[in-house]
Amino acid sequence: MKRSLSYKQWSLFLALLALASIFTLHLYGKSHQDAQFRAFAQNFFLEEVQANPIHLHYTIDDPAAYGIDESALSLPIYQAGSATEEIYALSQAREALSAIDPNALQENNRRLYEQLESYLTAAANVAAHPYFSEPLSPSSGVPSELPILFAEYRLDDASDVENYLHTLEQIPAYFDGLILYEQEKAAAGLFMSDTTADRMIAQCSALLDVNALEDDSHFLETTFADRLKRLVDRGSLTAEAASSYEAEHKRLLTTLVVPAYDRLADALTLLKGQGGELCGLAGKENGRDYYLALLRLRTGSYRDITEIKRLLAQDLKLNYETLVSLLRRNPALQTMIAQTPDLLPEMTPEEVLNDLRKEIGTSYPAIPKGRDNTPIHSTIKYVDDSLAAYSAPAFYMTPPIDNICENLICLNPKDTGDDLSLYTTLAHEGYPGHLYQTVYSKRFQEQEGSLPLGSVLYYGGYVEGWAMYVELASYDRATALAVHEHPEAALYYQVCRLDRQFRLGLYSLLDVAIHYDGLSLEEVGALCRGLGISDGEALNALYTYIAEEPCNYLKYYLGYLEILELKKQAAVLWSDTERLSTAYDNTDFLYHFHSFLLQNGPADYRTLARRLAVN
Picture 1 (tube, rainbow, N blue to C red):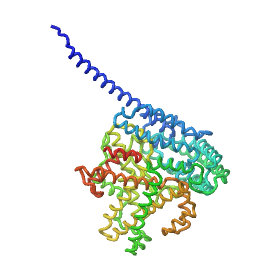
Picture 2: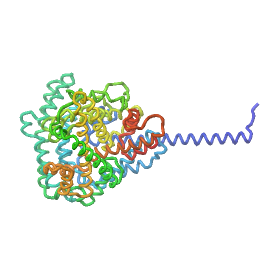
Picture 3: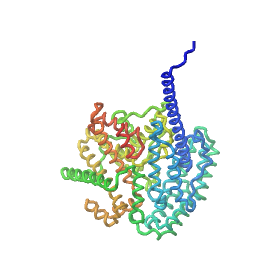
Picture 4: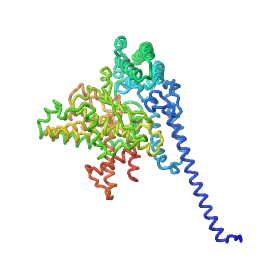
């Protein structure tokens, strides 16, 4: 017999139905918001990686898997007045992002939303000053960066060769765009100084040396030939095709690329005199505002400038006083510093890297397993002699996000001559530095199912801060290796580390003093002489570098100090837990702290501090 529901039963049924409907709508809302964000993030990623075919080639190994036709891409040619368009594009991206509710997102997506929002805001603040950017910096500008990127351009098959040659064809138009931008900078009163222009003009001639090209000895030719030979050896290319590509490569270098460098040098010569004296950003209208915006973007630090000065000054004072005290109590150390003795066991660069790798799994977490458990390989090579003057002491070539198992570290022989420098440099670039941090982050994000968007958001303060943090820690490991045969290594390596920290701290403080406070070369000289640094030529070179490369030292050293501040925060937050001791040298504490950093970065330090507070 069919029974009807009572009033109370109907009321309960309707209440449950309402709750179910609300829950369903909530789930739909979250699902819809997640889908919307993932679509936005994927489109943003694809737009970014396709903006420059060279960067795409280094970012993605298999573009077709992402629906990208690499052969159809072109270099971003600057057009008249387009410097002001970036701020509009960023504002549009921020507006589209704001339509998504971060609280309705899954945890992974919410965290990525938080990072993207912070990054877009910082980038927009920098873009609001369109003519302060300098793509032609002598130390890190396009003319010196391109040859390195071309020399290491990955050639896996004939299509890669074709794409590479197609990119070379575009260099004249690309450089014409750079010239146009520099002309607009000059009209805005923000052109480089004559000192910088002269260095750039000389660099253009030195990098594309016509004599080296004529006798087939230029590094771009020799490295291209080597990569073609590897393709021939494995049957991916015929010898005839390789010979044809070499001839075409030479033609492009001599008839298009060299003239483009010459035309750039000529344009800079004509613009000389319009930039004024070499000085910091504080000497230019709105320069301080630009500097603060750049500092946020480059370092990821959101402290106010007074707090940053205090942090740097305290660290400088501590390192200086400790260093001076050690040298006074141990006069023999002065002789050792001058001699830079080799005290470590004799090791090749590969053996050094293998030794450093032994730390992984103790104080540093093991790299998560990949989908196919492919082992991580690393190759170490030295940069060509013709590039040594323009290259960093070393650099790590970040692998493509879809092929992180093959890693390359390039060393500059002029900067890694003694064994301690080689050891600490490989700690910075390899394990537990850039190579380890990059592969760990990619593998962890892969396991978490994170979107690839984070790969195009560059957090220099985190990336270089981490590398500086582990580099300085490597002095202790080097001491442990050397002290049995050379007991004097303990004090000597301590002094070397303190000297490294003192100099980087000083240069970082000078960065703020030059670009925010407006210190002149003379005032910087007086300050440095008070600290015992009196070499006039070296001081002039230091001032020039900092004036041309704002925030570069801060990216490394303020990033490092921010990590130390996070470590202090972790010690306080975790002190009430029973899971570990919060002593800084405790292996368990270090393991958990390093795991937190690696699993939550790259990110800015404000974001990391917030995540640590709820970790």
